[in-house]
Length: 102
Image 1 (cartoon, helix red, strand yellow):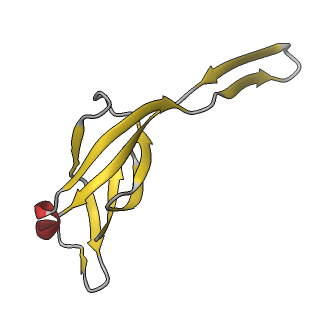
Image 2: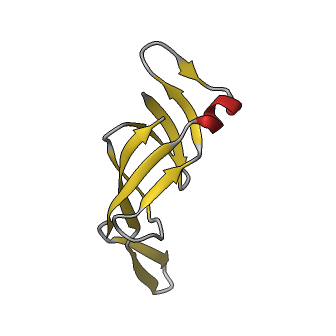
């Protein structure tokens, strides 16, 4: 069974055993989480879109690791004024493994 979930402002197409990177989740590594924002579930025979049927579905996942993406540079610049500021940013992520979709 596959599902389309919403996590942290993004949508992901997942199936059992998939490992995906989502925006950082504030729980320790190895903890089990349940994803409840399911948009759609489908397999070879049928697809489920109804809200009542989707509420009965459970997606269980395990947080495997936390990390940070490479640094990006942000530049603020005003022409002819000798004004330039740079700032760096590293976004955090959590890598989760989808254990079951039921």
